Image 1 (tube, rainbow, N blue to C red):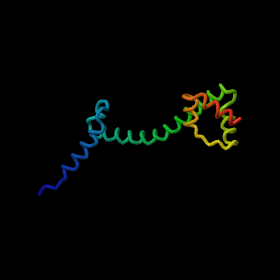
Image 2: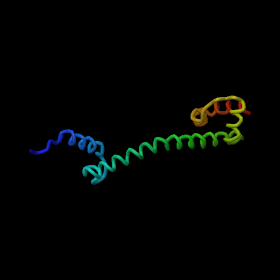
Image 3: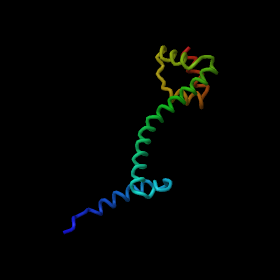
Image 4: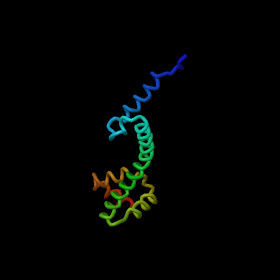
Length: 114
């Protein structure tokens, strides 16, 4: 008596992962074991880089705030210290956006912090 194998489910699982690896280079797209390993590694990269993305954007905002602050005659460190001391709660994302797109509003915030 031949053993019973749920070929439908195993084939569907393989098809699902091979569909996810479409667009990869060479054997990474169509050889089952290589495609599966590449796909799994891609998930770890995605998880890691979701964290790194936040880090990179924070660094970018700080650079933009610092550049704008230096045009106003202060530094990033002194500006953030003054904002904190005055109790002005504005996050770095908004502050960087003001520095880039609305310099007059940024200038007013710097003036209020001094």
